[in-house]
Image (cartoon, rainbow, N blue to C red):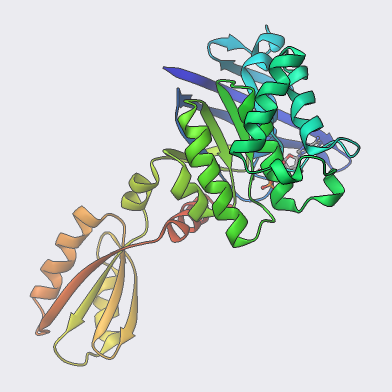
Length: 318
Ligand SMILES: Nc1ncnc2c1ncn2[C@@H]1O[C@H](COP(=O)(O)OP(=O)(O)OP(=O)(O)O)[C@@H](O)[C@H]1O
Ligand SMILES: [Mg+2]
């Protein structure tokens, strides 16, 4: 079932320099229970998109539905179903950790007793018991993030937005946060929209990814699909040293070959459009040469290479 649905959504802002099109005809869906990663460079429109789904901003055009409910027609009903962890930690300065979680739950409509009970559970399962009386200024960034996650999760809402949940965390806290997201939030069956600049994080957590640039959708798929579709390369190792320039000259014009680089005196790496199609062309040409091939290795590009290639192809600045 589709939980979040955007159709032809446009959002513009006015600025002293003129109109900014932050989101430009964006359409995508998130299915129930999936973690959807939203990637894109700074200013791509990720936060604006989340804010529109969360009813903080109104779209100029297009439709947004959460569990079938239109954000413009019924914003209050949408709000009941979502929890939003903003890009900047938003803890209230004078509330302690336990007060924050309890107040958050009260604000979400739980009775005092239920809020307190849920808060105790959250303090326990998020390992926050010894920090319960601390105020935000006494907490590290990682702990602040954990308090936000604990609050959001305790409310048991079906749709959760995590806007760069691990930015600014050290590698250890990052991993802890990933495990919390994996164990506790995924288990809750909630649909999660996750933005991040950490490609490893997205690949680890997201079931599916959309990539946005200049407010537009430029790619969509599972991290695995995207890796398969983009950034393929083949390493060819020859028996003998080769004359690189001559080989490059011949291969550069071949359909599907995007680049060729020498990696050692007898090996080259060749970037291809599509592994299935282009590898045949490549093998055919190499076979017609005098060169003796020792080995052909296909190397999967890492997800970051793939991301950079997709953004690069879309004509965006990085
Ligand atoms: N309230 C606002 N008023 C004016 N312009 C805005 C506002 N919010 C966002 N923008 C502009 O809209 C564009 C998209 O911004 P947005 O914050 O959605 O990007 P982002 O993808 O979340 O970037 P980042 O990765 O840096 O968080 C940017 O050009 C930004 O300057
Ligand atoms: Mg943002």
